[in-house]
Length: 320
Image 1: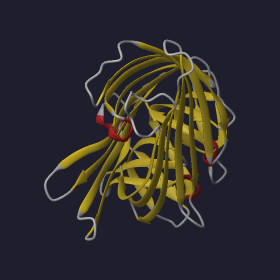
Image 2: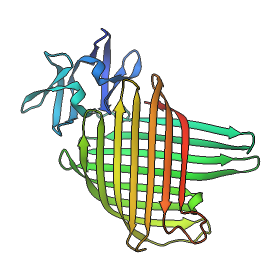
Image 3: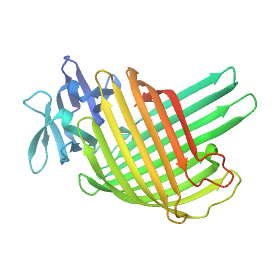
Image 4: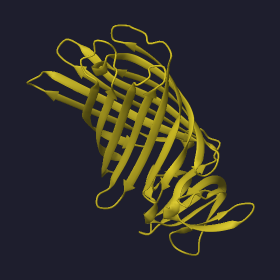
């Protein structure tokens, strides 16, 4: 038996549920392929042929099947121990326990380009993220690149790659790890490799926002544009990850990651990375994005003219 979604406008979708994140149900329809449906538009939902991990904004966690409720806008979750009724918009995260790898993937890809005749310099920005979750572990890979193009050269100005994984100990506490690669020519960083291990807590979980905090220990190695290697550096990171979504007046999504590093090996050194993304839906699956960013280092490599880098990037994003 396939999953079914009944909308308030009378439309019925038949296929399989991929998951729920940030108030949106991702659904693989047998005729329309991948469809993203906002939870408040769903009247009834049925998926009693598969097991799901369901987290609510009340920090309850269920493992079970989904059956229609006798009240519109609600579902009944059937577990081996009990049956619970919850409001659809109270779902924070829903993960299918389907064994197929690609059915658990969700993410976005963004592309932007700007050029001015006066400077004869073009800027190309690429970014993307993809998420994959299992029963206890959530993974997210994010990539961003900002490059400059003039009449004779191509320069990779700013690059960031991050793989974040967290293991849920309780509904609010987790242990996590992160692998980072960075490049920032404005701060004279040719390449920086970093591993972070630690733990954190989900501080805020509501119907339209989440905020989590994490700290631990960071192991960092960086090479300057003068090819000077720092050796192994120890730092204490403080990470904040924030998500907000609103689907009416206007349809807006905000995500922000802020990390502050306090040096141990280099006592007194403080670094900060702040990345924010604002997304407005233009048409189904396509979003206009505006992404301000800022990096700060009070002790950048010797010879660096600046200790801060910032910018504003525009692009078109496709979410899947």
